[in-house]
Image (cartoon, rainbow, N blue to C red; front, side):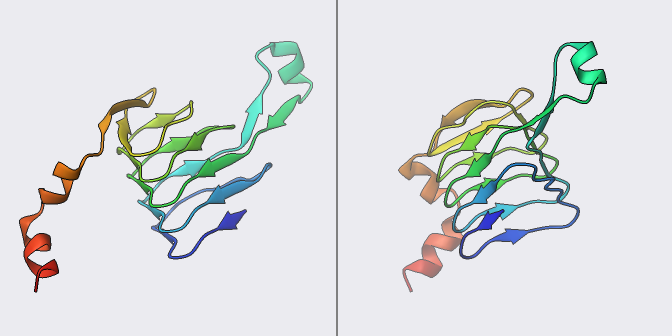
Amino acid sequence: MSVGENFYTNHNVTIPDGAKVTFGDNVFIAPNCVFSTAGHAIDSEQRGCGLEIALPITIGDNVWIGTNVSVLPGVTVGSYTIIGAGSVVNRNIPDGVIAAGNPCRVIRKITDADKKKYPVFEESANR
């Protein structure tokens, strides 16, 4: 596992890392998330014999992952992205978007207008 600068994870986060899990800088993870690199065979006979694979997970810089998110083997989450609570991330998610759901899908791009969502922050930044 590799963790960047200013990494924060809340309670009950599970990272069974049969393959490498990489977290970039400024990653924030809410409670009860799972980052699972392990996968099993689709064929029941192979699965019964214990066939297992492990694929790396990569989380970019400046990512926020909401509560109860599961990130599955082989997934890359791009930088400056938000993953909404309860999502099951089973495919790559690009940079600079808000994505959520089961399966996780891009909802929209993050824009400059999002900087104006919290006027209190804007007022304090200008002081």
